[in-house]
Length: 560
Image 1 (cartoon, rainbow, N blue to C red):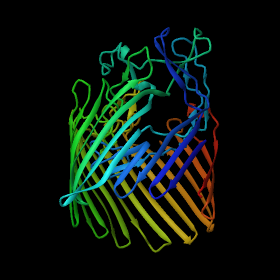
Image 2 (image 1 turned 180 degrees about the horizontal axis):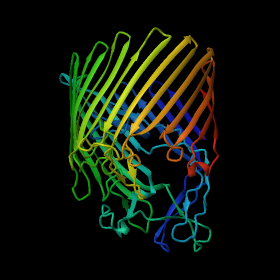
Image 3 (image 1 turned 135 degrees about the vertical axis):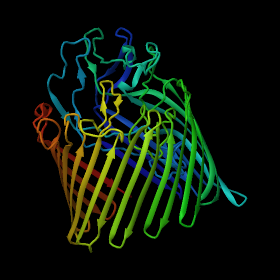
Image 4 (image 1 turned 30 degrees about the horizontal axis):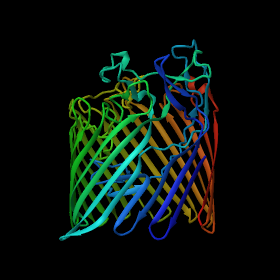
């Protein structure tokens, strides 16, 4: 269950709060000295207030107290907004609805039981709403302070956020001198036992859990920028952060593949600049990270040029993030491959993208080539898409995407998806993937729209030594508005991973039917029914319950 409330008053005052009822989260994590491990209460219904804020904004000032996001420049030094070109504060009230069901029992026999309490059952249940702990504190900014030919902009922010962590991202610093030493069994994540009423009774271990309220992160940052005009500026951004663990009796710290650097305080400082004139905009940012790991931090830089014409946009960028640039608050342009938990790390590359229209034809394209400076592995991603608008009745589209995780390696038998070890540490792959797809939008009458989409994937898989593994995905969406206040929407998606086998990967059917009704723009009701069925013959599918799964979701929005 999710409850959200927002209210506004006067001209620039805005407040919001989000409450979430969960049932799948463990609680009260402690150190168990008898087992020299962690223990936690099993999942139970809990009420959480993860997001709340009060915001004030006028032409001169902007301030937020509570949960918020903030970012600047090319997102290299500090950004957690999710925007492409951030510049300032925004309240954070984002909650995620997750469609995938949760495994009802996540316990193992561990070291004290002869068998798992879950047995062979694979029972699933509806998932909790999810959220990301971002910043909690206060931020204030002066948006325009006149100075000479231009103006200054300055922001300051502070946060003291209580954070959760995936259980395998921990290690015991008292036992392990270097978390990178994977051969040392003391460097593995400490086990987490289920706390029973009888503390001396044999207990199962919890698995794949996010442990709540494990540490407080304090953070302070500032930005000062001088604007010559709205498109030309220079500025400096910096922040520092540290961690206070909340579980006493054990020296916890982060594994080297966690997003947060281990060892102690961390931060970054960077300089940004931009210039714009007529059809061209140039953005630049360089930064230096600092942390308590042996290397002490590293350097990074990005430069981006955007050329905009009538219905055309061309963007080119160069980037470099060295392997020691461990900045968890960096969100610059990068590929999804990670180095020790971060995307913007151990990567140097060049990217060119295009978006534009030529009459009824819309085109998009991207070419990105990059390498990892640590071992000079070259990689490539190409993408192209075209959509043709033929009146309002028929709009076809085609797209293709190619990606190679190591241009030095060719041939089949490699992996493409990132595999993981038991401890969760990613292992790099060197394979290739090709996506081809087509989409057709049909509108035979004004209130009715149909969308048909087909995607075929060719992907390297170690199980296929001489050829690609082939997957297919089909979507059919129907939207209909019989009257202005009522809209109906239905979708069916069929997925088949590995067309040659019914016992290897997923073969599933997912569909939903949704009705939304509004009354005088004050009340909106939305009812959604989903059906998810696994159709393959894997052992995990045969043991899964329920299959098919039926999910009902109700939303009510009242504005007054």
